[in-house]
Length: 94
Image 1 (spheres, one colour):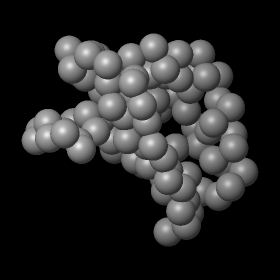
Image 2 (image 1 turned 60 degrees about the vertical axis):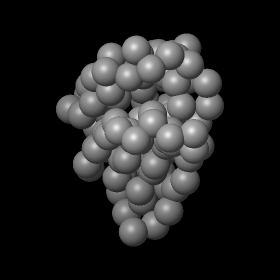
Image 3 (image 1 turned 45 degrees about the horizontal axis):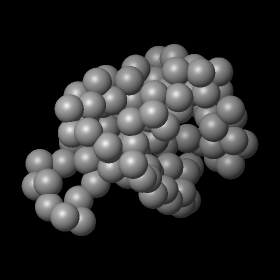
Image 4 (image 1 turned 135 degrees about the horizontal axis):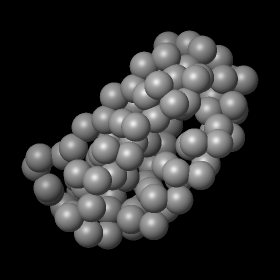
């Protein structure tokens, strides 16, 4: 299995709650997702990111399919690209 983690820093802190909702909305809509977790930062330090997304998928093919899933590409990515100032990601085998 693979864990896909993305940390988002948003342009406007007021977009956090809506962004969390949109990220969570992938559950049940993106079939490659085995588990999904979304969290909001509460420290708001200089080095903090605002949101973390953690997704577990079966394998590299599932990760590729997830990255190209219609809901992910047409709903989630456009929203997150419009509200983020930066993001970092890591993918690793469990």
